[in-house]
Length: 246
Image (cartoon, rainbow, N blue to C red; front, side, top):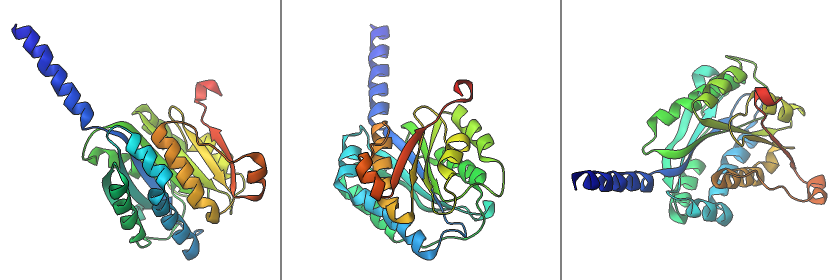
């Protein structure tokens, strides 16, 4: 009888733990280095906010058991990385709108060089402060340039992937047209990881919405048909291949 009660208690505890776990914890790491103009910064910031105001993303979040936990981080030099919106639980339209308002209210935290590796490391450290456990942990890094300062991103990527964190990227190809391939080789990692390439900052909002919806659903992001992409800003999505599969 005692053994049976113990098993029942464990089952109740596990059920409660699952019920209080978010489906996804995501750190959005946004490039604010010198190559990002004031107007481009606003397009990034407001693009993220608009994504969380979009019905399609809200529906994806609402359908995820436990919703998501989201955090916004800005990066440039290693000593200038800053959390601008801390961990926020999002599970319905009202909480998504609150998070969007917090993003809209942020101001640029820095300018500097492009320290991709330290940005990934700082993003990874944020998961130690999660208010509640999450089924999946993900870093969503966006930027318009290759690393030119700090620890190489591939070394940081490899460490984070071994802890179960997935890293996806949004490559903005205004400065370096080859950035999507660079991110695929050096930045993204983990099961299902991908990089989405966009032509310019004006395409950021739609790309971010597609990317976030795919991340919540744990699926590759859908792209417009080729004829639509020809005149638009979204280019292609590339998947990560682990070293042993290259």
